[in-house]
Length: 105
Image: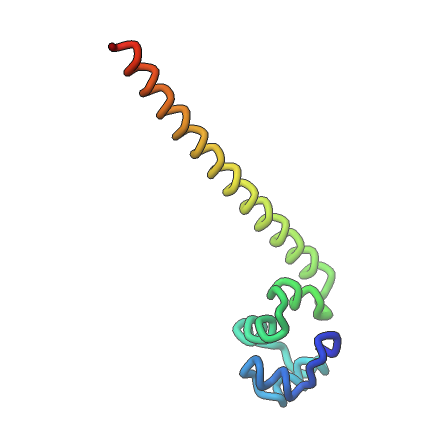
């Protein structure tokens, strides 16, 4: 938060989370609700995952979050590969139809 130049009041105003809640979350006296993490992350301009891992989480939670991030990255990569494969299949199907059309004439 300080790295972004935000005071607790500024973060509260930008995120819509009460300043007292932000104070309790920062001090460890309260755990943020899931939606609060999203609002705060958006206000700070960071990924929700970044915010969770930056928090003082137990090692096993941090490891699970890292595994989730890796799985999410892998899924995104597979989706990109699938898109390329579909485009190639469409191109090959078009070429095959064209080749069959030339043979028929």
